[in-house]
Length: 144
Image (cartoon, rainbow, N blue to C red; front, side, top):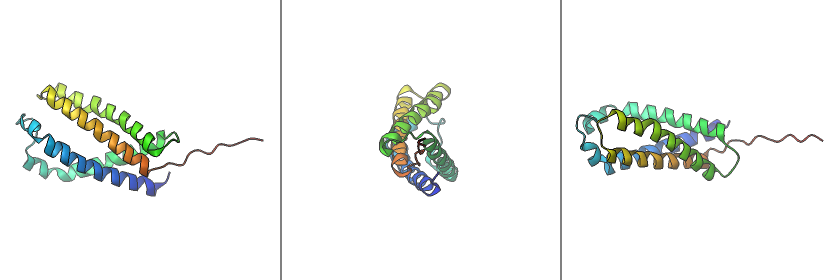
């Protein structure tokens, strides 16, 4: 396991995920979130919790890089990463956005937009991880 490439992939994917989240969830979807006052924190309340968000998302990204490295099958980093991101995206949609729709008082449109945004984010993060972190492929032992 190459820790330098793992760290580089995690940090770059984390930064891109934060930028994506700011643009998509913080701006493009802000009006949709605002339709549910009392369900989501205000911008001011959210700002107070940003350090927790930063630490939690960094830990999650490091774990994603590790998972990618364990499942790497030796193909193109971009293709392998995007495939990993799609699987991760399906997991996030099923575990988070479906659960939020079921347990929170939000509408189907917000759940759908959130699910699409999370899936796209996961594919982007996976592709970045795949391009940066190229695990060593197991060597084949040839017996003569």
